[in-house]
Length: 271
Image (cartoon, rainbow, N blue to C red):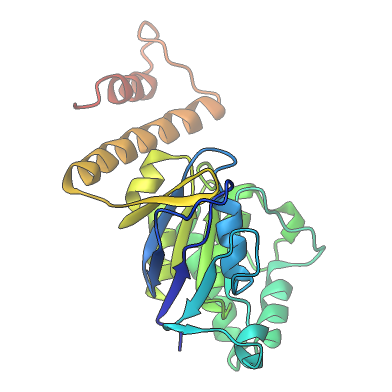
């Protein structure tokens, strides 16, 4: 059973040894990976996926439970170490939700498929405001519905112990709930993000720079307070966005009670 993944530091893009010489990622931990475009976030995930052994451009090595992965470890190597949930991912299979879940459950040799189908739909519907039904066609799901189904599928069926949540800032799902579900099912979660609220949701955040692991911060009390305020603003913005999308208008002179309430909530956020 996987308890810990360790990344042993290699070199940055200039061949200079990385500042962080060892990164331990624990089971059920949420780790944010931040840094500007081109800073090396994608390569880090690739190194983990490939069980790097000083044989990638970064010369990093991956340890599983403090042990190197050898070519003889066929069972481990055949297992997908990383599952990804991305804002850019969409289903392209012309299949119903029920057929997709059943097919994936059979591949993973899940015994009680009917229960799994029920559980996955229940979890997915916890994450999105748009109901998902077993008869829905995958290609007709909205972005939020698709991401919610992916998270539920990864949590309940996938045997990948690490989940990468990539660029999911506006994916239309309850992100905090998604993290709780994934870690509750024993997954280590890496959040690759540019969103400060998401970065501060993690217990720790790894800063990438020039292709190397540069800094490692633990989220402190002040940052947690800031994160709560950012999430409050985000929720108010989402309500306002949905109201305007549905045809509402904000006009204080038009006796529009709902619009004025949203205006007051959004404009007078406590500091």
